[in-house]
Length: 279
Image 1 (cartoon, rainbow, N blue to C red):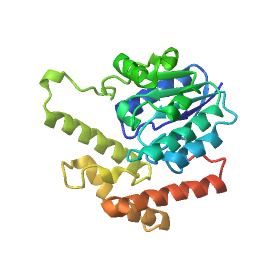
Image 2: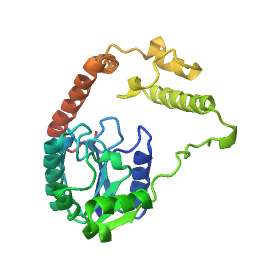
Image 3: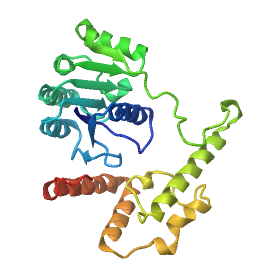
Image 4: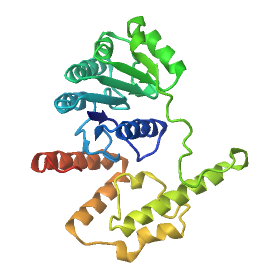
């Protein structure tokens, strides 16, 4: 069975992305062919939504053809932008419902109620929920809250996914919680992040979109971080220079959205020029 999964896998790691990753792993283990489309340009995916909100829902409607099932992870921007007003929310949910009606065997997952601005109530939301074969909530408490907002008519569709649980799945563990301080946990995170970045640099990739949102160089840096700043890692190739300019833009709040727009525009062009190539 071909399954289209719409949502953001790690990176970055969060309860939502880890929960979705578990669902994708389970689908692949069951022998299904899975294709992932992410709203977040930093996330791991086969393809990406060019925009979120209403344009993202419209694009989603064009992607569902040919798939036997569609799994959608609700998250900020999908289907509703975090700062959307009442009218935009209504239009976003209507576009979302249209996309779901074009799909087969739809499963919607909700990890956090704040991921859906305005909650699950309203006529437009109700139309979208009716298109689902199943609606999965992270906990039983969220399940009850969802039914209270959406109405008893959707109760038979609602189930508990169990969520991602505690984020402690990294290879070397966290140790005993009672023995850890905040500084210990931050040290582990920085150390592992430095190790992963060094591994990426070793494979010839010196920068990833999103690195600039973490602590800037010089803050809690260790020896493994020095590889990223090494002179040998600097390249004068046009592509690498463009990535460095985007990285600089990422560090400035006024230019951050411009950098994201450039990346999304690049992906949109590549989807047209090379539709058979996963990005």
